[in-house]
Length: 116
Length: 116
Image (tube, rainbow over all chains, first blue to last red; front, side, top):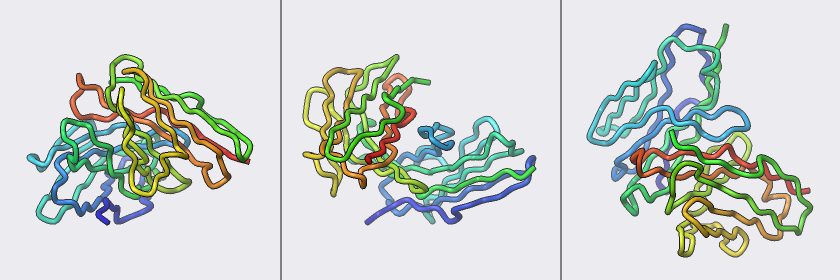
């Protein structure tokens, strides 16, 4: 079936460096994408989102890029800090019901490890 | 952002018993809530969509008679795992969307269920 997937299960970066986490999606009908951060034993925490009519969106230290041509999504974290260590998930909403009434389809997750 | 709260945070039950998990939207009303299940080192999988005042919608492969969902009010959805077995041990997470925040989904802190 259709799914959202991630290329790298684990990403290790030096503190202070930039991190890039990638995600491939397969449903061309998806119109809304979200990145979540999940710390051990906790629920997902919203990081940033982007709609399909955009190709880039920036937040505080984070940037999401969307390439609809190749169905690729990425999360860039600038100047990574120890507190950024977590599992990061991309999720898509392909508007089955519309109006925000859909559950999300999550990717497999990438474990980001920050090295001191 | 909006706050979604789950209770309990963790629960241990004996095989064959039933367990109820509550999901509350604390500062907004949610006509729709979502229930996810997450096994260790895996992604979140949507189980069902909880609809206030009507029947829940279950994802393919999720037994509706085993996972009973009740959305009795605009701020409360409950998931009851009936006749629990060890293979039902998992991390259960609910989410809801606050119309005032658009399409962003807010997640509860999750409930760790262990069936012994």
